[in-house]
Length: 302
Image (cartoon, rainbow, N blue to C red; front, side, top):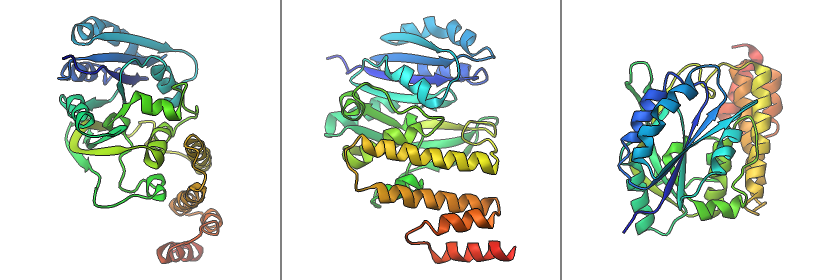
């Protein structure tokens, strides 16, 4: 009996330094029924050229391979939407061009679907230094702790990297019937996580499914000014609200505003800006003693 078709979306943008390793990673996948969707943001480097050189080899490995070229201004959500439009599999997974799936990741996650009634399988990840390829940290989820939505929004006991999640396509369509998420500059992973957390059936696979490369100039880690950071958390608040809307559950909005205030306070403290930190602390329902003490330190210039 043939295995269920799994669609793997890989997103590339200015990725020439990582393409060769990614191509080998995809060829090493042990699962035998894959639709591979390579979404390539129009880049100034050789990303597309290198991918083209390896498509024939990937076609020997996969059921089908499709390259989707995206012109104009690209954002992670725009690239993801272009990939989602091509999904044909019973399950799908999206990963980034510089993060690499473990060879048995898909097989192990599909096995969970065979044995459990669920809509999403969440694996673990390893963070590694892309230059030396040495392990930095292990990303794991403590299954003994029950997360609240506020935990998710604040990044507590959760893994954001999308390559750690295999999703049932019909379940995703319940939230996004057109297979398209709200387009924003970032925050696309929350748009997948939040609906499944609130209304989906998720299972944890306590095994590493993804190696996550860490580099200083990545989209999520590059240095931002105070103004850029404020714009970013304002955008996150909109993304969180949009993500809750698709579930039809409105009672969770308080968690959005509490997380927004927490992120804003950390931002003010990071930039040593008393007025911003104070403004966000006043928006919190339950500021902690530690947060109050930090605000006093800012005011005193300690």
